[in-house]
Image (cartoon, rainbow, N blue to C red; front, side, top):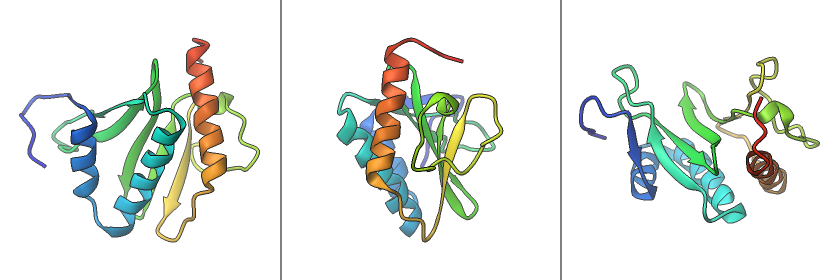
Length: 138
């Protein structure tokens, strides 16, 4: 995807959709599914492509609700959804399987055959939204 040079953020749903369509197969399906679930929990969630730089000219999708809700990323053999404030969220289904020793963030790594527990993911999103609404950050 071609972007103007020096641009840090590209805002909006159309850009996120275009970014997702630029992925291949299972990666596009995994992130699109997570996005659909996020938007099902709160259709008012804003989204943008952020952190465009020479080493990552396409940036990454970021979802907002009064602050960064979560970030999507494609790594070599997995897709990652990172919750910057994930350490404070209840995760009884143990979806978080990455960045477990990080200070405040937690992530869900989804390799090719990973089946995301939709109910548990929606619960995490609701918890993250409540946390952001309360204005509590670590």
